[in-house]
Length: 267
Length: 268
Image (cartoon, rainbow over all chains, first blue to last red; front, side, top):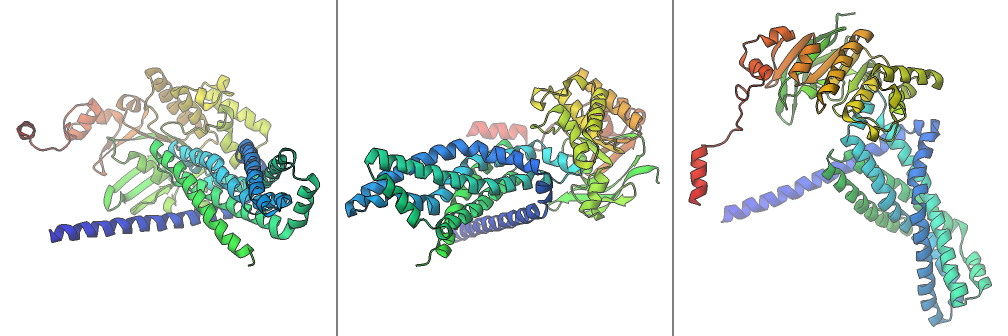
């Protein structure tokens, strides 16, 4: 009885240890892929059409979901914001609330979450399937570096697309908030825009939002690329990899958001 | 320049303390078709990966054109690979590129040839495999045999000195098998290349191979010309070549006593 208990405990500890070692190994392998991607990035810029093609697939093809989501998020912000502000007689600050929420937080974060769900999973599935069907091995055997030819252009496409998508998100979100606040609710049009202009600072708000979106772009794209590259070459392996991309990207974005915000905000 | 373009010397290779190959010695002369045959899981494809430098041996050496493969740095390996072409088992065509772009891929990536010359070369390679008319098709629109032929055209795009074939006949109908067979021989002779075929299709391989190595239990179990091996009395070779159900490679996976297990099951 005692030995069964001890064996069970030993197995539990062994299992925990194995999972920890596996996670640390994956973290190291991911970091290695990141550094190799940076080192072999030259071709992505020398032959910029490779990166442009990927910007189309990751960025342009994500436009619809970004714009529609931004519109609804902006409208909800307008509604909820007005609902709270009018209790304190500050309903005319709705423009400030919508703009600052979007530019500082919701723009970069929601864009990154949507990007991970749409473009990230597509990247993971594509690279996972390329691995399963030996396309990456074929490239290696043709003396073509798959990191330079496949991974790096997708990485830079994600990094370039993310801030643009985040900016579009913020822009459309503000329009959504305006449509709810001004024509629907009746907030003064001049107050909406003038208070926003006075309160939104380029350096503290907009630039910080851009910095966040660039960092999220690096994180989400790199996670998607690594999961695809590391996926077991089976249908099940690719399927699990796409799920992991969404989960890990989402958690990483939220954690990074906290870290970056704590550095950016001076209390 | 040696008469052998690839030499495998006392090669041992294994995963996680289990040796897949033990002291393998093989030579691949220039301009010949050499086959590596054996049962499933005998490590035939692993030998191709060792020759191509995708994995490193545990002991021993693989030399390609005199250069030890696993001692090369990244640039050295890529230089060796430019002398090689490989046909993967399922073709490994790039699914987002057309037939034309697939065959043009190595030329565009590794040479500075102008597009007009690349166009002519691609059409010549596709013509050699009988698919010049299919140059605009996408890989998803090709049959298995056609995809294999396009992959072959891509493998010989830069006129390699060594062409490696990983199970080139697997899953093909008899006509496609015959076509691939004929192409392997004709391309080897036309390019003066060395072909290394990994296969377990005896009939097709024996038709075109100049020399055959049989791999079993991690070692070279037998070697010789197809004619010698057809007449071989070695039990493993005889079972393999004649497709016998039972022999040194048993039919039954190791298990307990059959009667005892049935009786135990019915007693429950």
